[in-house]
Image 1: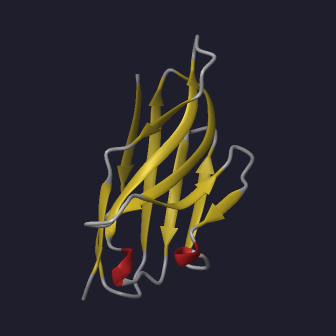
Image 2: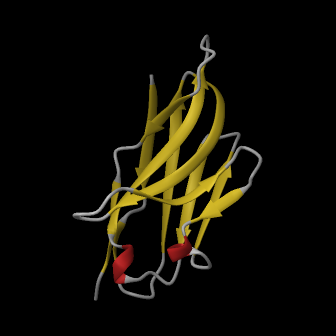
Image 3: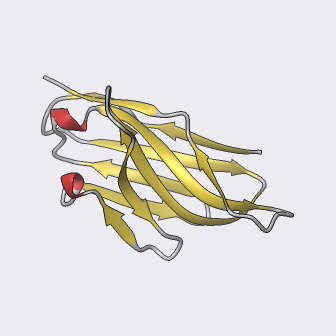
Length: 121
């Protein structure tokens, strides 16, 4: 079994900052790409940022220059530093990880339960 546990969401004023963290636990043999997605009410879930095991990153155009993704391979964690937040960043943010388990040759995708980020004055 694998668990992805997110933390760090909340309410923040426009222009403010938040840092989201996600920790993966379980019988993880190898961790591949990790990332953050978000889903606003009435909209589809979308990629926010992604980071490979080698540290290569890509971002949604809407967050470039404001958000920074990072990871700690030794701890199986991924963080998202969000600066200059805007009301349109309001959404539930989900952690995602591609990984393989001990004893398995397959790479599977796992999701966290989501954490609410609300940007409002």
